[in-house]
Image (cartoon, rainbow, N blue to C red):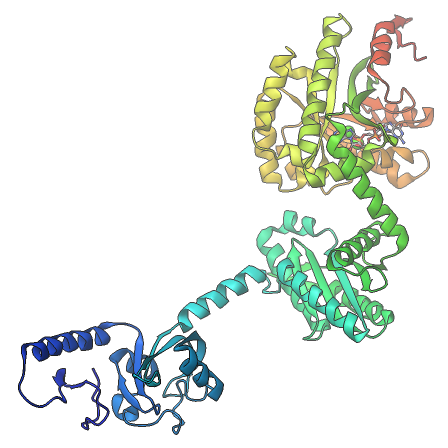
Length: 602
Ligand code: C2E
Ligand code: CA
Ligand code: CA
C-alpha cells in the first residue's frame, strides 16, 4: 500500500504503513473497530490484486494508488498522490481522456475501454481500464475509482497470431487471406478514385523438378530467393503474396495504365530468370504470369484472381516464361471448365461413364496380349467429352478418386467376364492418376476389387505416368513395391516426357515402359525422335523391362519399331479404342494362318 497525504480534509480513509489512520475523533466504539478491521482487509486486498487501482477525488486529485499501479506504470505514490490528474503531464491516462469522456463518466457513473497508457519511462502499453464513480447525496461524483490491467502482452500475442494467420511462414509474405482483404480494399479505393488495379498470378515453371532433383530444402530456399526478387520489383504499396507452392499473387493497387503492368511483368520475368545460386547449386528457373485488370476484366476480387489465373494457364500453354493478359476468350474457357466441373459431379450417379478398350499387340507373336481401358464420358446434355478435358478437372477437385475406383472395378469386371467366356487371357491396363496412386489404402481397394471379380492380380496392369512416379521417387518406390508384392503388373506411361534418371528406374519394381506417342509420331521423319525411341528400347532391354510403343499409326512406324526390337505396340494402326463387345469379337476371331496370327478387325 502506498503512502497517502497526511491531511484528512478529504474525509477519505487512507492508510500509512498498512495501518488505518482514522479521521474520526472521540470514543472508539465496537462499530468503529469493526470498520477499521474491514478497512485493513480492503487495504490488504487492494495491494494483493494484479490490477492497478487509483482513487481520485472530485477534482481529479490523486488520493490513492495500489502496488500494482506502481508495478505497471513505474510511478510511485510520492510521484502522484496529492497531485491533480488534469494539471500534470505525467502520462498514464492524463492525455487520453478528453473532457467529453469525463462528462460521460459523470453522467453515466462508469466507463470501460481499452486505452494506451504511458509508463514513467515513457514506454506506451495497452491497458484495459474501467472507471466508476462514488456519488454524494446530491448525486455528484465525489470519488473516481480506476481499475486497470496491463494487456500489452496479450495484445502482442494476439498481434503475433494475427500475423501468423495472415502471412506465409516460409517467405514472410502475406498469404491468400491477407491478399483477399487487400484486394477488396484496393478495388474499393480504385472504384472511388477512378483508377485501375492489376492482379498478377505468377507460377514458376517446372518447380517440381527442382524439388525432386535437389530436395525440398533447396526448393524452399529457392522460393525464398524468388520471393525476394519479386518483392524487389514492387513498391511498398503493392502487395506481393504467396498463395502456396510456387504460386504468387501480386496486387498493383494504383495502376495508371494497363501498359505499366506489362512493363512490370516483363521485368519480373527477367529478374526471376537470372541464375540462382543455392547451396552450391546453380538453378535457372523461369515463370509464367497471368494478369487481370479492374475494372476492365472484373469488378470483384474472386473474378479478378480467377481471371489472372486463367491468363496464367494460358501463359503456360503458350510455352511458359511469358506473361499474358486475360481476354474474353480465356473467360470462355474458364466458363467451359466450370460447366464441365458442374456436370462431372453428377456423371457417376447418372451412369454417364463407360470404358473403351484399345488392344496391345505382341510384335513377335502377333497376339493381342492386353488392352488399355480408356474412360469415355457421354454427358446427357453435351455428348462426348474427351478425357484430356475432364480428367485434369477431376484430379483437381478430387472426383478422380470415386471415378478412378469405378474405372478399376469396371475394367476388372470386364476382364473377368472375358476370361469366363473362355476368350484368350489378356492383361487389363488401367490408367492411374497421381491422386489415386498416393491415396491411402489404395492397395486394399484393389485387393478387394480383384477378390470381388475373382481376377488373378497378373490380369491387371497399372499405368502410372513417368511424371507421377518420378515425383518424390523414394515414396513412389515404396508404393510400387507394395503393389508389386500383390503380383500386379506395373508400367510407366508416357515414358520419355518426364525426367527419369536411370538410377531410379533400376530401383522401380516395374514391368514395362510405354514410349510416349509424341516420339512414335515422328520416328520415320525426325531423326531425334528415332534416336530417342531406339535408346528407350535398348535401355529397357538392359533393365530387363518390356517396352511398348503407343500411338502407332502407320506401317512405317511399325516397321521401325519391329526393327529396333520393340516388344509390343498399341495404336490406331491396329485398332482405335473400341467398346467391349468389339474386343470380345476381336479376341474370338483370332487365328493363325501360315504361322501368321491375325484378327478380323472389321
Ligand atoms: P494415355 O494414357 O496416354 O492414353 C492414350 C491416348 O492415346 C488415348 O487417348 C488413346 O485414345 C490415344 N491413342 C491411342 N492410339 C492412338 C494413335 O494411334 N494415335 C493417336 N493420335 N492417339 C492414340 P484418350 O482416350 O483421349 O485418353 C487421353 C488421356 O486421358 C490418356 O492418355 C490418359 O492419360 C487419360 N485417361 C483416359 N482414361 C483414363 C482413366 O480411366 N483414368 C485416368 N486417370 N486417366 C485416363
Ligand atoms: Ca495410358
Ligand atoms: Ca500414354
